[in-house]
Length: 213
Image (cartoon, rainbow, N blue to C red):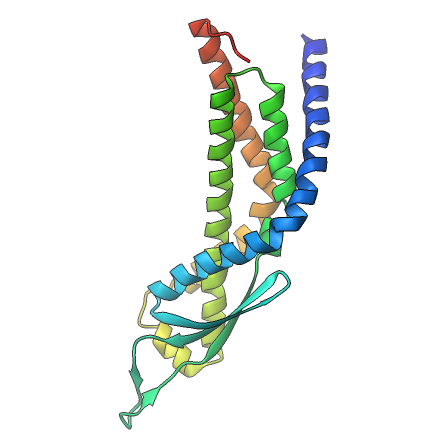
């Protein structure tokens, strides 16, 4: 039993090395595109929710800068229209840096377990969706905290955003927690999830007498 466990761990390690050597070069080619797409999706959702228009987007490496204006008119005490002109900078590199390790671990676990191939493919797809959602939640919290910080230096932005319920301490703490720990622990959390799912698939197949591949 102990020898079998050692062999399984060694097989997972070898599969991980092979997967990592393939995933890393691919990720280096697409990581900026993924980061920019993620930033655009998340910040457009935040801007829509808080009635802001994105008038311009500038890309600089892994960073993306959004120029925003208010979509709802603001009038001062002289009944004159006021316009918010602000720049919000987002950098997702601290959120997505562990993607190659995460994907390599998922692939290594899938390759090392005997289970029906369609179920393994579906499990990997589900895991990648969970990874994407984790990135979205983390970046959304960071985007909100960045907006709140920009409001602290602009009375007009402060007035505009205060029309909405913004639990500032909760947003700041959530953004800090997710930014500090989510990316670091995502490979192990998703690996545990995949391991458990594969065990369930294996046990279910054995009970049904399915010849796994």
